[in-house]
Image 1 (tube, helix red, strand yellow):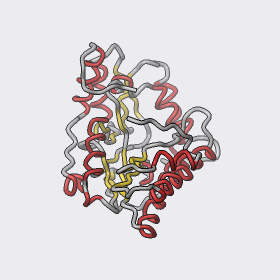
Image 2 (spheres, helix red, strand yellow):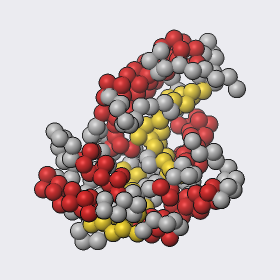
Image 3 (cartoon, one colour):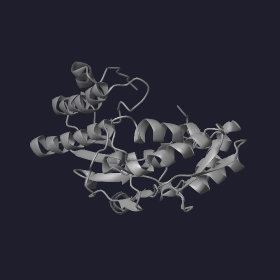
Image 4 (cartoon, one colour):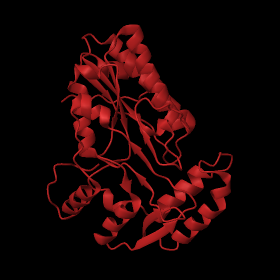
Length: 296
């Protein structure tokens, strides 16, 4: 295995990495982390994608497939009505990260139309590594989500300005139990929910997209089996850890699903790992057992 290291903005370095390969799987991205700026996100995610596409064009051998890791965030999944998103759902990014991913998708399609590059789009959502499930749903995550993402100064509140104060109060109460597992519902007790994806299913999906000639020019939602209830997840985590179960009532519902029907039909994609399966793997990993995955 040859390893080439290059900044995504180093066009010459990216070209060298792309030269002579059979296929390209473009997974590199700058997410919202730490002090990362919106400018850096655009540089890495958009201009970096341009360099990958140019590298594919300039390769001394014909590229069989070039894959892009997209995101379900481009659908704007911050919805208060129960919604299922399909690949043809309008993409309406609500932040810079999602926008850069949508720009990258459009770059891929443009290079297909202009140069007939064999592009393939994968849209991931809430991918969980083998050692992560027991570390989810801390009050600090809810605090970050509500106070830094949803209601940050100058931002349009995703779920309505009339819900802000009640949401902040619920978060403040949850933060009194910092190691709790948040079982989040709306004010009427309806659980929040979204589709979690085990990384092993993600890898299987990538392999299927890579190998399928029918995937050229297509976008696929590569997500877990179905949306998972936050309440059910919280019960599982609390039952298998020393963290207390913590009921949190928010003033709105957040529940969405991402359909993987297209990937099932065209690729034969069959996501195997439910959240209980992920918990079992996390526990086995903690016991030092070989689960076939090396967490990073």
